[in-house]
Length: 448
Ligand SMILES: Nc1ncnc2c1ncn2[C@@H]1O[C@H](COP(=O)(O)OP(=O)(O)OP(=O)(O)O)[C@@H](O)[C@H]1O
Ligand SMILES: [Mg+2]
Image 1 (spheres, protein in one colour):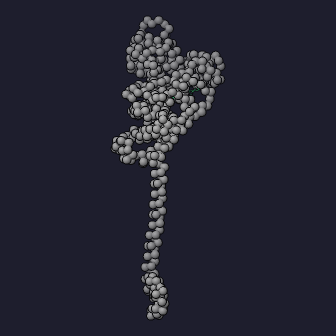
Image 2: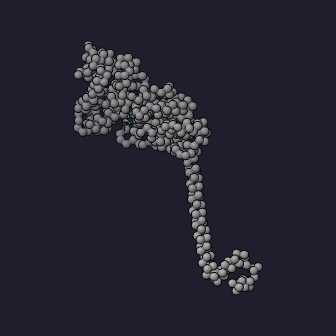
Image 3: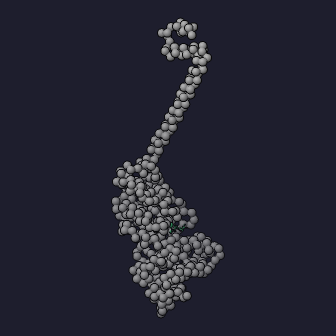
């Protein structure tokens, strides 16, 4: 110890730093004293361990904090309302990509020209409901009208999804993303809405409300940038109505408001039948213009069948007796003829279906005593359109509604407020079943 102190003493203290002195002192002590060395070794080890553990924890925490912060910044940059809206705006500007047609395609210049006006209205006064019988070619005609120039048009088709998924899938078509930034009190307040109004809503209305706010913003941006409104087409809205009309009415209200505010051109496409009354039940229908996509002409239909490999005689008969210009029927007939069936046999299948439908109605509505009014009106319909008032008066609203339903498909509604029988084969079936060519003598409905 004395030697040690002497050694330290020999060094010029002025040249040593205090910790060097202390270090040298401890080292010297440790060399000299095993107990001291052990005790200080233990303490030193513990201190070193604690320091190194703390150091590691701090480094890891710093790393994670940095990472989380970076992530947050990236999320804020890529998911902020501005970025979300910029993507939707870009989607409108680019327009939806419409698939190319695959097989022989009938050109329908009139229907396409009419739809192109609907897609680019000047000025925007109403929203539009495009109606047409099931399978008459609405979707294809709308595609044809968009395909040539889709700029400014987003097209979305509703499939058979469950109702709650509808706004999410529409958001996908619009390149809109629901995220934490589109669901904050500040975001809603900026748009004049209290958060609880949205938070308390059930799905799918909650998601629709958030999507609608985004749509409104982007529609306004589009109009300001391009000087005209963008267009949103929602096809097959009958799929929504089938699951309950409430969401359809919310969408109609938006479409009406968007037209009133000259904000966005909304086009809804639907097969009519049972769905039109749902659409009409909304007061928003007052701001709707209804346009119709109808069947192609008989000549076009025959040509279509010839291009699909049907011989001329069968093609002419199939069009005249079964399908008229209805694509969905022409496709079915093509398949059945291809399987070797004759036109007569195919018609017989359709006739049996129609007879079953009518019979079910008769059973349901106890119509055995169908009045001559009902009989006469149905027979009149085999010759052409009748005004809806005449039909309602003769058949009653209940029977009319049932005849319109898509599972029965006997009546078809047209936007000029007329009804026809649903298709060529229904005309022939009803005529045969009700013996319409015979003079009316007694209340006759179906020969049972
Ligand atoms: N112009 C056309 N040329 C050739 N085939 C067509 C044409 N339009 C429609 N089709 C065919 O007819 C069928 C029905 O067409 P589409 O789906 O467009 O009818 P829709 O009226 O939209 O039917 P839905 O009522 O079921 O929605 C499809 O197979 C389609 O390929
Ligand atoms: Mg369709």
